[in-house]
Length: 417
Image (cartoon, rainbow, N blue to C red; front, side, top):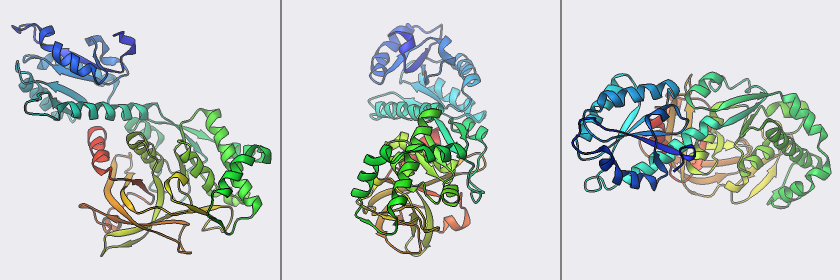
């Protein structure tokens, strides 16, 4: 295995006075770890930009392992430490001592105990850990394009860009809104002809929007796509209401289409929701719906979510409506099918708080006094909708199809919480 091709590494640590050669102890574990693309690297690799696990082969390794970890922390402050322990040669007691010291210093870490006799899920735990590290490193490589400033009303959803990068990893690139407006004005009807036809033709109904409004929102999509390519960003957040006031059009279709295309795109310049959407998409391979919690029912522990856009791939069918607040442009009224779901929200001054609940989609709605796509969602587990009234993290909530609460919480506990 050529070291430069290693995706995940482990460093074996053994005492110099062990009566059993370290190579002999490591041999069997090394074969198993290779099945998960975790390969042996030397101690000089502690600063490499790949996940590093520490295989504690014997007792008497506490100081040596601790110093390697300390060196690792000079490069990657927020990465948790994973110790691999096995049943023999005082590996476990040494690992317990090491993790005990790390916890005293407020560092995050865990021990994976590799023993198929008493811990049959140990390899599954390693597989999960590798997946979680992959998400962590994907986030570190992510570039967000913030087009315009966050909307003025997002007073609890404007974390500092430095904090976002320090805690979560993504880099934020600011893109002037005027650049988008100029690009929109340059998009020709010929460029959008196929996209416009498919968008309108697949709709179950077109109610308020005019032909011109329908074409204009597709132009917004074409222009946003060009910005993504020009700035080489992986996802965007758009100060979309300025398009309504300045151009009499909306970003609702454009954001929906980008999300369907696999490019996370959020409304209103909401960086908090953008981070949540990216995180969930990397972990679950689906992009959540971003929506307002518009009504709550404490007795039934449920709430109505509503927004004027939704990934079209997430709905059974959709109608083309006007944007709710303004009556202009195009909003999407999607029908979200019943079923299991996960509702969550990030927050906090440093984006270091999280609210996660498994849930169930009970029905879609079509009321005229809410944003166009509407879903009634019932919470399951210990969380109550009344918690939102006493300890809110902010407005927008994120909805995933399927129960991912346990997986989101496990990743959060490992890297952020």
